[in-house]
Length: 123
Length: 171
Image (cartoon, rainbow over the protein chains, first blue to last red):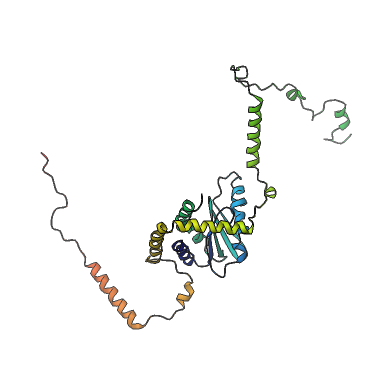
């Protein structure tokens, strides 16, 4: 688990402006959480993280344009990218100046972690 | 009235026809043929729908509709209690620890691969750019070596020794 966290931390350092990577379950309970001190505390709370998987992605999937895979939210100071990897969710919290395309591309690197966690942790 | 294009509403109410009266009246709506499917007359013995089947079918439709409806206001955000949250996080850690030996070597390799790449993302590039330049001696050494390497690469050539196409002795 420690190695896995190190790997996620290694990915965190690779993108300028990325402040936190959190892999949670549907209710926002974190399985892996790597965050810099400058990450906004509000965005790390389960109540915030769970809104994506519990509501947003499911509802967005009903709009008639297929299943929802990612939601990118850009705020005045931060951006949050949440990826639906059912039963888990990847949340990337970054500063508003971070390269969004680079963040979205981290999905490839994080997929291996999510798959391992999903198979080992979730029943 | 005397105005051109005006319509006399009273005459309409009295049932008199004017330019806005439909020519066919309500003929279409009154005489709509009952839509019958070609298989209406065919009833197989034993295929009479039971009330329970009908009810379950209706429930199914109702459930399907409820699933498809987007009603954000009706969704209650199911927030976990603090102790549930802590308990579940602890369980996840325990389960993850159980598979640790398997993941250990895999992630060690992945970390190594990420760190040892020739090209990699450089966060905070401005810090690197404002750094002091390398000393002149190192610069000359690099230039000399790179020119030697370049020269050596240019001198690589293929030496012809034997034919590339070898004909086999086919009878």
